[in-house]
Length: 227
Image (cartoon, rainbow, N blue to C red; front, side, top):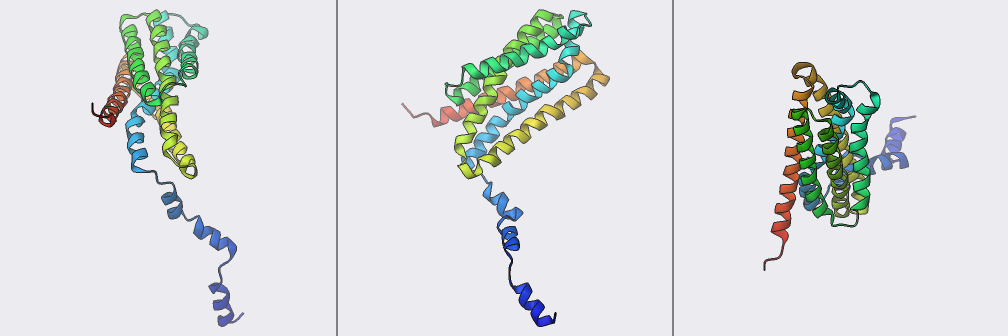
């Protein structure tokens, strides 16, 4: 094939190259861009996402060991009970409160989460296994509604063609919050001990949940009509 025929063939674009052009990375990223309102709300809700799933990571990694240390037992069922207490409450609460306004749910559920984790921390200080289970149930009652309401608050702000990208962003935060803090806690246990790690972890979770509650309350106060 001569140079002229090669130039003619290279000048024609195939359907394959056209599809590559349409789906270039830059174009895809621009297509997934959310509105400023959605980005602002996502930033306000992100601490609650991190708090809830970081708490789940703590319970699934260190919760049984913590329960057994308070119970002074080696029963696997007793250790698993603390996970059941948290996750059972998560499932029940998330189902019950679905009909309520999502913004109100996030604020209230975040505060319930703070109280539940606080009771759990106090139970560890006092060495109370009963307090640990009670705090776990309360934390679950905050966890479930908070997470479901975060998703309900964000999805209406994205048009249908951008909703998948929004959900992907949510679950990236979820997976990182579920795994990274638990890994850090596992390392911290070897240096500082189980209870000390639990204290620090719980304080971080409570702080993040409180940040979302305050941020949403301020947003709602600003948007409320003046009387």
